[in-house]
Amino acid sequence: MPLDNKTITEAIKQAKSKAGDKKFNQTIDLILDIQEIDMKTPEGKIQEVVELPHDTLKPNSVCVIASGEIALKAKNAGADRVVERGDLEDLNGKKKELRQLGNKYDVFISEAPLMPLVGRILGPVLGPRGKMPVPVAPNADIVALINKHRKTVVIRMRNQPIIQVPVGSQQMKDADLTDNVMTILRVLDGKLKRGLKNIKYVYIKTSMGEPIKIKP
Image 1 (cartoon, rainbow, N blue to C red):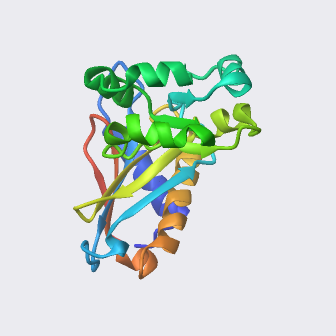
Image 2: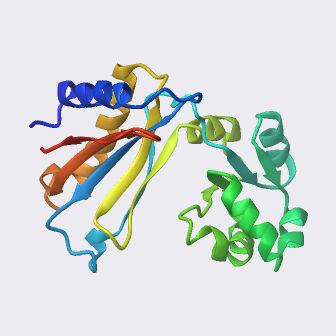
């Protein structure tokens, strides 16, 4: 079955129909079963930040680590949290608070000059979660970056040949969800050794519904 717009759209429609009658806007995940890949080599370790073409209706929460003017701009831009240098230094060694910070926010953006400090204090918490901050220059357009990262997802494959990534939510249009799925597939076509031929099965699934299986 070709991994084209028509096939993906049909799977999305089926997943929505099998989502059950829940009282919340369920997330829709793309799950990929990867084949013929050596997990011990660099090709078996994928981590790629992808900006989706369509808003997922469940925007990422963004934490900005910055000082001075960039911190002020981030606050004015509606960042979910701004951690200034003094705040960051106060967190040093506070394992519980650091874990809470790492769990609470989806995306971290840091002013580049603060990255050595961020790496030392937050690295042990954010690294294993795949949430190390995106470094940005002090003169970066922080407003544009916050808006961009509200729509990003991380494609990650570690230890197991499985990739699971949210592509949107149940209330989105089928066509927009399809565009988001196809964007991720295009990225993987360039990252996997044999492109999409490395994909054994594709599943489209809502949070509480049963998965719809596609065999490419």
